[in-house]
Image (cartoon, rainbow, N blue to C red; front, side):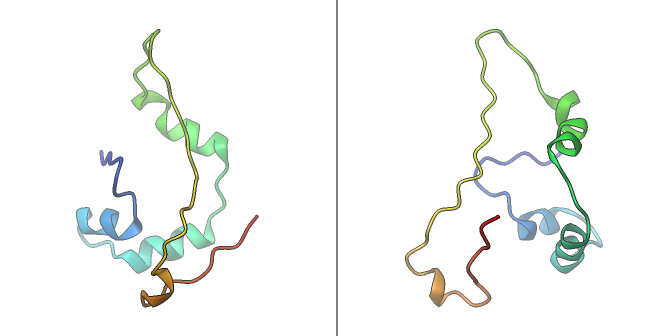
Length: 79
């Protein structure tokens, strides 16, 4: 299982999977619709609970000052 707290990109995932490219993953994610229930079903067995532990989800997208200079970067849509 891949667990990263600093690199959670499609590119990083593709680098760790044989015969699956970034483009394949990207097309799959664009085609499928996932909700929070789907996520929970897929990760609940991996969560180790502890009475003093916390599980935090953060979907913050940070503005990158030089993002406009990076090839293929585009503005994200607000849902």
